[in-house]
Length: 468
Image 1 (cartoon, rainbow, N blue to C red):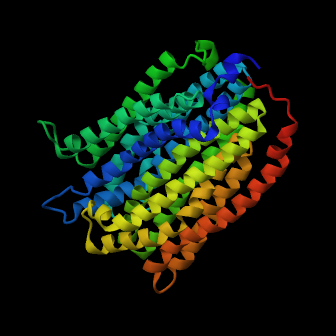
Image 2 (cartoon, one colour; image 1 turned 180 degrees about the horizontal axis):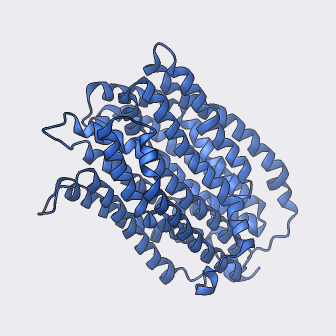
Image 3 (cartoon, rainbow, N blue to C red; image 1 turned 180 degrees about the vertical axis):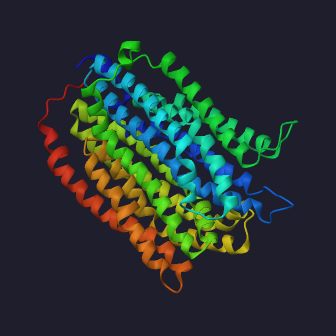
């Protein structure tokens, strides 16, 4: 193995240190990504109208109904990016420059195809989707307007997800973070201007929130493109690499497809929860939407560190270093659990001030407080699940990662939520579905990790590894 490869910090620096140096910028980037949804909710919650009482609460409800499709856009973009990330990092570890270039080019083309699909959905599918969750005409109208704009302008979200992973896969996480910060800042600045009509601009209401979100995503995409093509010297570029290659696509989606499904399960879970909770009360739906967006700051931080775990473990897996792979597993689980523990304590302490920022009705506010108290009980289990899933993706065990996601986001949580919603004290019991599902999934994740260690990681000691 030549010096160019072995001097990559993912293969030479102490694993615990490089995971932090790569992970902290990604964490910041992911936390800022969570700003897109929560900032919209905070501003639209303050919308007022002389004709409609509690207009802001109706608007937050509309955003909650639109949210699963936004998550689905993210799922396809990030999932494809994860596949590109893993393949590119592994190819770097193997010093296969041509494959690195093809992985990056095919990722860009696949991103454009994904955008085309959501653009079409924005034209023909939004009305039916929103209408399937509510019969309230005002909520339906606002949900349609917001989601249609987000879908038609989704190229920013999808392509930023691709370029972000291209930068992360070569260890240039600072640049992806700068791109995310720039876009998030644009969104935060534009939200009040477009929603409330400042500086002589028309008052656009919920449509203004959508335009601000799309604009922020476009800014992030353009900045990430600038850094990728200007700074990512390890990745060759050219029109010929954009041509789809069947073998490259297969390798991307060997990891990427399970990642897409895992991310998409969040969307399906939220859609299912909206339907189930809607039978309890509209306040429960709104409370869930608010808590979910607050929770995202913590979960996205964990996802950010996981996105450092995956390329580090994948690089050393490709290089054949069993010791560094095991260190990656250890530090990945440790650091993510620390994040989740700190977040759990913080949310328990600051629950009421955080929820108070949304200016909801007393009923919705009390339900949101209750949701926070109950759901945070499962955060340590969730942290283990997130960390272990990142390891599975790195060593090409995407199916194991998918099994964990199915358990925590579909197979356990939705039946439990449906069952609890039928009980007399449904408004209290429904929230317990989430920590129970995380606990069940964590048990299975640990068992699968033991199997991966025995079959894949432990035998690596027999590989021929060349060190500096």
